[in-house]
Every structure is written in C-alpha cells, then in structure tokens.
Amino acid sequence: MAVSTPALSCERLSKRYGRISALTSVNVTVGAGECVAIFGRNGAGKTTLLHVAGSLIRSFEGEVRVFGTSRRDATVETRRAVGLVLHEICLYDDLSALDNLRFFARLYGVSDYEARARDVLTQFGLSERAATAVRTLSRGMKQRLAIARALVHRPRLLLMDEPFTGLDEPGSQTLVAVLRDFVRDGGAVVVSTHDVERAFDVATRAIILERGSVTLDRSVADVDATAFRHAYWHVLFTGTPRA
Amino acid sequence: MLRTAGIVLWKDLRIELRTRDAVSAALVFAILVLVIFNFALDVNTPEMRRLAAGFFWVAFAFAGTLSLNRSFALEKESGAGRALALAPVDPAGIFLGKCLANAVFLFVTQLVALPLFVIFFDVSIARVGALASSFALGSLAFAATGTLFSAIASNTRMRELLLPLLFLPLAVPALIAAVETTSFALGQTESASFWFRLLLVYDVVFVTASLLVFEYVLEE
Image (cartoon, rainbow over all chains, first blue to last red; front, side, top):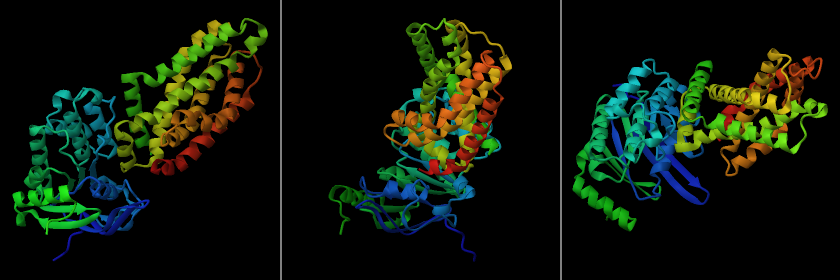
C-alpha cells in the first residue's frame, strides 16, 4: 500500500530566541484528514511551531516539511496549499470584507474568485457585511473574516493560532462545522487553543506542548475529554505534566 | 509578475479611493509649503520665477515622502503585509504594483497642486506635453526609490524618520532632472532633452534594481 506524503512533518524541530529555547526537538506528523489540537501554557511554543510550519520563521534546527517540501525552500505550490490564521487578523482595515477576500483569492490564483469570496462570506455569516470596511467590524466578525481569508484559496493544510478567540457561540459552532467538513474532505488542520471542549469537538489528535517539548500526543478517541481537561489544567497551573 | 502587480495596484487604489489618505496628506503638505514660499519670498520677480520649478519640486519631495511613508504602513496594520508576503506570488509583482500605485498618487497630487503653483508663482505652462512627461517620469522616479525604502523603513521603529534619510539622497539626481524638465515645460529653458533622458534612465535603473532586490526586503 502506498504511503501518502504527510501534510506536515516536523523532525527534531528546535528553535531558540537568543538564550530562550522555544522548541526543543519536536517531532510531529500530521496526515491528510487529521485535525491536531495543540495545547500548552503561554510561551510553551505553540505559536512558534505554527509560525515555522507556516514559513513565517525560516531559521530553525531540524526539518519541517509541508507535503514533502522543506519549509526552508517553500515553493509556490506549497504556499498555495497552506492557509494561516494568526493572532493578527491579516486583513486590510480600509477595504471591505468582500474586497479583502477578493484580493487574497485573486492573489492565490483562484479562478472563480468572485463566487468563492461570496461563498466563504456566506459560510461565516458575513454576507450582510460584505461591503462594510473591516475597521468597523466587531472583534468576533474580524476573527470570522480572518478565518474566511485563510480558507478562501481552498488550502489543503490549515494552521490556526487560537482561532476561537473572540468568537461568540454561533461563531465557534460555525468554525467547528467548517473544520469538520474540511477534515472530512481530506484537509489537514493544526490548531492551537486553550479551549478543550471546542477542540475535542473537531480534533482527531491532541498534543500538549510544555516548555517547547511534546509531553503528550494522543488520539482523541483514546482520551476522555474530562480527564484530558483535568490533566491539561494541571499542566497550566503547575507547569508539569501529571504523574 | 504583471498579474500580481495589477492585483496589488487594484488593492492600493481601492484603499486610496476609500480613505484618500495618501493624496490628501501629500496635497495639504505641498500646498502649505507653496503658501509659505509665497509669503516668505517675493516670488513675483523674474529671478524667483526662474526658480519656481525648484520650489515646486522641493515642496513635492517632502510631501511625497509623507505619501510614501503610508505605503507600507498600511501593510503593517493588522498584519495584512504578512499574508501578502506569504502569498504564492512573485515579490517583484508586489513591488511593481505598489510602485505604480505610489506613482499614481504622486502624479495626482502634482496635478491638483499645479493650479495653485501657477497662481502663486505667476508662471505659465508653455509646453503641456513636456510638463506631463516631467510629472509622470518624476513621479515614477520618486515612487521607484521611495517604495523600496518605504518597505525597508517599515520594519524599523523610526520609519517616519528613516525613510527621508535613506530615500532623499538617492533621489537627488531625479529631483535635479525633474526641476530642469519642469523649467523647460514652463518655457524658462530652451532644451531639456538631456534631463529627460536622465530621468528616463533613472526610472529604468531604479525600477529594475528594485524588482531584483525586493524579494530580500520582503523576507526581512
């Protein structure tokens, strides 16, 4: 049986900021149709891992590949295959919601960019705000639009840094539904979050990062959400995994 | 590359049509400088009229810097520039789009400030075609150098200060050529073919050089 190329593979990934070690020999592989939720305290290395995977950080030790291509020489095709949701919304404040999506869809070479931009807006419940400048949208609406931007070019790997931040209940439910569809259609997702319930609604695997190292990597099917939440809280409050 | 340039140009023009920030800031500054020159100097003498093109371009050089500063500042807002830099496109296309957008803003600023300049300095436009060429080539020269240095300066804390310090010394040849070609357009000199050629060569050299190095600027 042919082994398919992983969407993302990190081998012995290490990253230092001066004297501070953000990631230490991290090994993570994410296949197509997988959604991996990454948990960890602030400063545990979640954002650094996503930034390396997303090519925002090019200087690191070890190897990171996206669909088999090293992130150090990210090609046009692998760039096209990745969608990124960062802490910043990465949108133009003075453009309308629709113009932002049109712009990024065209930039990524989406042939039906007009229809696709409108579809994604509708998917995230923003069609009534299509002509509204991003500057005037609420925080939650901006977050929904930021996620829509990451999806507008139909990526195969989605990297999301705390995407539930700022979303209200319907917004979170929409995101969970969209991610489920995305994973069911063969997409791969890596999502960093502190929201165990939301993550367990969609994730197939859960990882805990602590001080730049993976301390837990389990299939969600093998883990009880409540027990995991207690273990995670233990990590959050004590900084050490439960014995 | 041209496709990307067109998309980026469309985006910058669309933002400017919504906000009018770049043109209005540069225009107000240019008009203020022209007003100050008008009151501080006795401009209605033949000697001063011969220097009119110089006054215009001095006002425009500083006003244009304001507009260029904004060019990459808007890419920094909300991190949109990060998404732009990660897009699967030729960085040279991004530069070309932003450079053309800046050239359009600078050209429009000049056109709008022109009537006031004509009234204040009591000059007449003897050669309309030459004036349009002088403005167009001068704007492109400013935009080519300014866009590159605006991108570099945008990554620093003192970008408003750093841009004119980096960009104006390099723009001096273009500024001199632009003054000479505008003087010709105002009928104050008989020939400016050398200066037009210099401006054209400056445009070609700086646009080409910027296209080549912009990838590294964007990575930083």
